[in-house]
Amino acid sequence: RQTNNTMFNEKLISETQKGIFSYFCLGHDDSSPNSQSAMESRYLSQDSQKLPVQHYGSFPGADQLALLMIARYHVELHKLHPTFTAIYPLGDGADTVPSYESQPIGRTIADHVAAVEGTMITKEEPDVLLAVNTPLASTGETEKVSKCAMLRNSTFELVNRIQSAEERGIPVAVVDVYFANGSDNTLMNLLSKNNLLSRLAAYNGWNTASNTIGYSIAQSILAPSMTEEDHQ
Image (cartoon, rainbow, N blue to C red; front, side, top):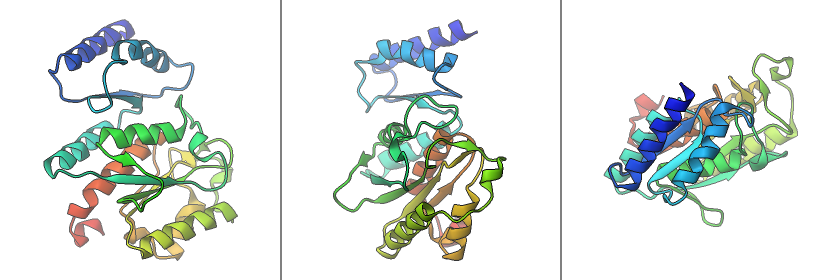
């Protein structure tokens, strides 16, 4: 089955190189470093190395891809050029390698932004601020005892930065990847206490980190087209 899957993906990459597809997005589900999925990704990278990011994307995750492609279509339809900046709390931040995945979160975010034809920026104010809630060290499972709400200075500081951006009129998408398969109760409590939940452009904290990242980016692009009632 895995051999057939690889052959099929090779064919799709070849068709993309011929211009049959304007964009091919290849997701790798549960792609921890030693997984079959990660190995296939490395193998296929040899075939796709000449394809630019405008036509080909290959990164962890699968469940987020449909919504990501809807957001890409929305960007193309309305001739948008969305810009993003990512902020992190204290810890490994962008270098965090989450559970079930084989690359740092910062790279996965950049891959997803490219998939919706966006641009990562660091100097000007972005169209969307990605507030990425990463742990101090490694991501854990949502059912762990450590998921109980605890006071963390790093989370207080992240929420303060979210509030500051929101007050300046910058849409904020919260990417809650502190735990796999669920939200961080410390962050959720602080967002609620500061009346920020309903003011966010997007919030996601579910399943794997890449699923959360993809949904947050896609929803932040689609959010301006929603009515206030639908947003609530």
